[in-house]
Structure formats: structure tokens, C-alpha cells
Length: 126
View 1 (cartoon, helix red, strand yellow):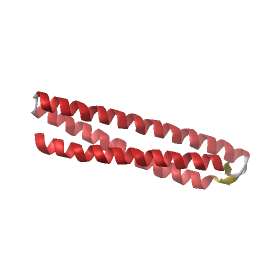
View 2 (cartoon, rainbow, N blue to C red):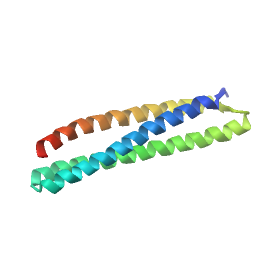
View 3 (cartoon, rainbow, N blue to C red):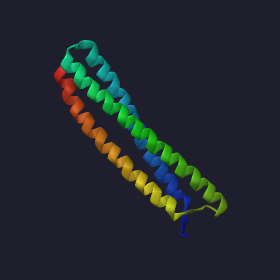
View 4 (cartoon, rainbow, N blue to C red):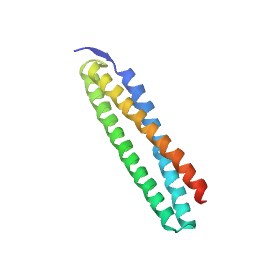
């Protein structure tokens, strides 16, 4: 097996987790704004569009939670390996965190697209 320092992973865990926390907070804000739109508009078209956005928010929050879980698992495995190998971890864990980063970037893009469409929705109905 090939080993690397655990510091590389720790920094990546932290960066990805912070980004996910930002987007989770963003979704919470957008959900509150959606609630305001629904309070001011009760027609069918608004409700239909709002349901679409609410579903997207739920899906993306679930995706964020799944990525956070993967990070915690990776972090735990890295800590266990670092104990056994004097601060070194298997390169496989680095490869895993790179895939987690790719998945996180895809979530970021999806949320950015949803936010853009949501802004148009809010502008139309508020």
C-alpha cells in the first residue's frame, strides 16, 4: 500500500464540509423565501412551481447530508489509519476524498442552477 500524510485529508475534509454547510444554510434561506412567496400568492401556478422548488431543496439537502456522511466515514478511517501508521494514511482514502470533492462540486452546480431559476420565480411572484 502507498501512504501519505493525514494532514492532506484533514484540510480537504474541512474545506468540503465548510462548503456543504454554506449550501445547506443557503437552502434553508431559500426555503424561508419560498414560504413568503406562498403566503402572498395562493394561485395554482405558484403552488405548482413552489412544489417543484421545494422538491429540489429536499433533494439537494439529502445530497448534502450523504456527502457529509461520506466525509465523516473517510475522516474516521483516516484517523484509525493514522494511529496505526504513525500519522500516515492509505492513498485510497485520498482517492476517496477526491471523488467526494467531485460529488460536492456537482451539488454546488445543481444548487447554483436551482438558485438562478428560483430568483426568477421570486421576481415573478413577489
